[in-house]
Amino acid sequence: MEKKKVLFISQEIFPFLPKSEISTTSRRLPQVVQEVGKEIRVFTPRFGAINERRHQLHEVIRLSGLNISIDDQDHPLIIKVASVSAARMQVYFIDNDDYFKRKTTVEDDKGGFHEDNDERAMFFCHGVLETVKKLGWQPDVIHCHGWLTGIMALYIKHVYNKDPHFKDTKVVYSFYNDAFTTPWNERFYEKLKHDNMPNEVVEKLKDTSFLNITKVITENCDGVNIAVENLSPDLQAIFDAAECMKLDYISEEHQAKELSAFFDKVIEANVLA
Image (cartoon, rainbow, N blue to C red; front, side, top):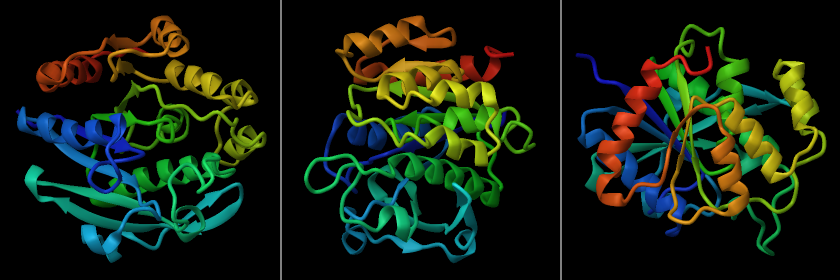
């Protein structure tokens, strides 16, 4: 039987960025899911805070060079790769000087959220999908970690849904307690129109607060899971209201088996049909 393919996308992965609930989970899960028989690929933004020399990142010329249009402006896509030798896995990095060169991550050096995080999320999602196509690798499910990755569900359901490469791809979103406290750019919904996002989706995103964007993301997922032991009440309410397949928090020792089985259920079900 052909192995199921799981594409992990995360806004931070240890050891490339410091330890956090997201970064450590995003380092561990791909490895253990691979060990129980799934085929994996892993993508993350190449934030300027990542030390390229220390982690031996190098550009993959054959995958780089595509221009991605965000808000009607072209931005060149650069793909880099590094290995996590202990896990026998590669990590692909989405890079672009306009969005990721600054020496920070989603926050600036004063603790404020970058004003273009909406565009960075859009570029990241496009970059991942276009690179996966170039690799000739068709994911059965995309597992999203961190709010910067969540709008992948919108792109799979409404923009790339007619692309044969992704027509059967499902999306699972993990709930963490991370949040952005400054709403995204008020023009976010207009920028999505340039991506041919349907009006019925765009209209729901005029409210660019964290909770509303999370709610819309959840409405477009095939599955959601809780990745932390104590989820905030606001996020728990969104999770509980979700109409897709759900998986509650599971301890680390059982995660590989339970998540792998959950992926199988999501892949085989037509939840949003």
